Image 1 (tube, rainbow, N blue to C red):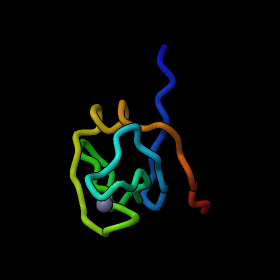
Image 2 (image 1 turned 60 degrees about the vertical axis):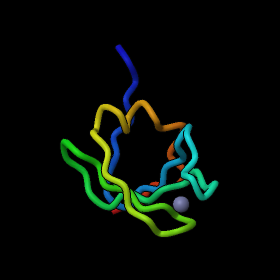
Image 3 (image 1 turned 45 degrees about the vertical axis):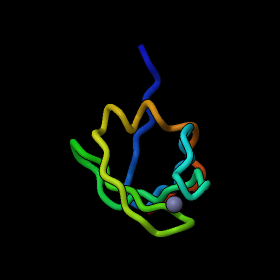
Length: 66
Ligand SMILES: [Zn+2]
């Protein structure tokens, strides 16, 4: 079994592949079959398929509680 992290809106994740601006941390804006994230550096948004996104996660930097 693979250990797939549960991603929630508000989480900040570090991805294995950096954004073209050089930043690697992204905030999760929306979850579902597609994941919408916003770059913490330049503010651009990206939409990724959940399966692809899960493979790109290096770690969860910040978890929003509540
Ligand atoms: Zn960026």
